[in-house]
Amino acid sequence: QRLGHHVERATLPFSTHEVLLPVMKGVATGTALFFDQLALQRGRPVTPDEVEPVVWSAYQTAARFSASDYLAAVNTFHRLGRQMAQFHERFELLLTPTLAEPPALLGRFAMHNPDFIDYRLGPSGLWRYSPFCPLANATGAPSMSIPAGQSSTGLPIGAMLSALHGQDALLLRVAAQWEAAHGPARFPFQG
Image (tube, rainbow, N blue to C red; front, side, top):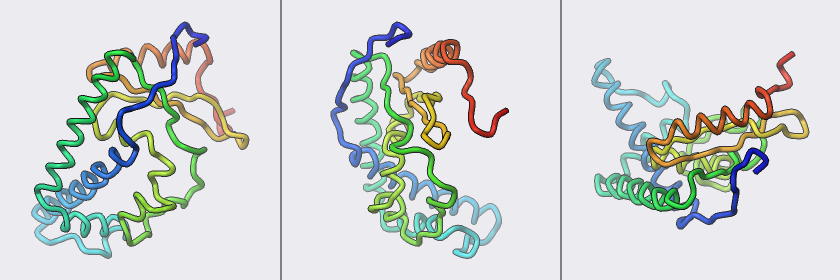
């Protein structure tokens, strides 16, 4: 607001899980596609000992999805994109935190969990840490994280801006305006 922007609270017309569930299916089926293409390229299948357990589980999870499941996820991506287009008729940008909490300690999301769905959606799952970013993944909308502050221990805190398709330049202008007003981000490891 201090930079001249009007900011107001808004509610999106869908839940976090409406975004996360199809994104999870997309990640799993994308993993399977990659593994299948790699197997063709090198002449042998990917084996569990070559990848992290959660990645292997994503591959196994994809095998349980039908073509209809995948297309339903794609249809959801399209619907979310249309809903965000309607949102952007009123609001130029969507502003959210980048993450739901300060940056995770190294190893917190190590990929040794043998259950892909639990890793993504379980009680300690990735979705609780990063519930905002999957919307950009689902819709393909331009989004960026800008440095908005630091935690009490000096870790970076980001604010995520998302725009209508094709409005990448708007995001870059706002980020440049932010940087001009606040200077470049400084983190504990910088001199």
